[in-house]
Image (cartoon, rainbow, N blue to C red; front, side, top):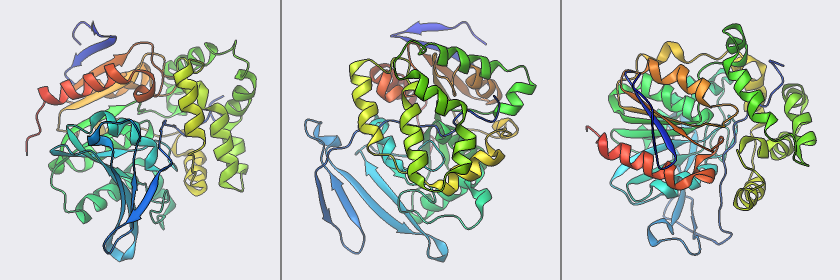
Length: 362
């Protein structure tokens, strides 16, 4: 590993490459205007206009595509860049609209496809519940890519979506030109504990930073009892409310006015696929291990995390980057789990500059 460097608030390193109770839904922030109008020719289309945004990000199109055996996948297209970017949301069980802030940051370079995971948004649920794991998600996204007649793509994911992006790049190397992984994790809680508990210690330190906040006791109570409550839930609204309660814990500075405003807006947008949550909480998260797949990734890979991220922070990123042949690790200082919200300019600059240095090989 080379010596780290700090540039514009970003720490960069080039590389050659209770355990069942914390919440495992990995959220991401989004802002959307309330203006809508419908249109389309032979397909369902919705447009959103963001007041005050530059023209290249003013139009957002949501469409649906039919997959083999009649299943449906819904997605949005943001941006007018010359390269396609598949961007994967966290969760599992959350809708792709939560990735709009990331897509806006990248829309000058990329045409971003925000694909609702199977079972989320209006995408058809998988028949087999095991398909809610990262492999099942990656295979679903590849079906969507083929149905859209897209050629080689860059992939980008945040949180659980970052873990899926790694899986996609490993399973489909011939069509993956770059892999951008943000706030991801490779090792489940039980495995981390068996191997020394570095990620657990990092999580506890991040949680403790908020102990003075008025909202902390209620958020921490839900956090510590997450799995029991999620498995007992009978309505998606129960998990949605749980996630809304713990959301501030994911940010490094959740009481900063702009962050607080964004969290409030995101809470109003939450949709939860309860089936995905229950499958995930029944062991997929606790025993998950992506490390055997990482050596199969052939494309340039950027691993990004916040220095103060409680789930996908440096402990997890250091499980990922050294195992990928052509990887670079970037640690965003003073940032938690949500870089597009907390450090948008350094985050955007780091990713787009990295893309320039690693042009797509089509």
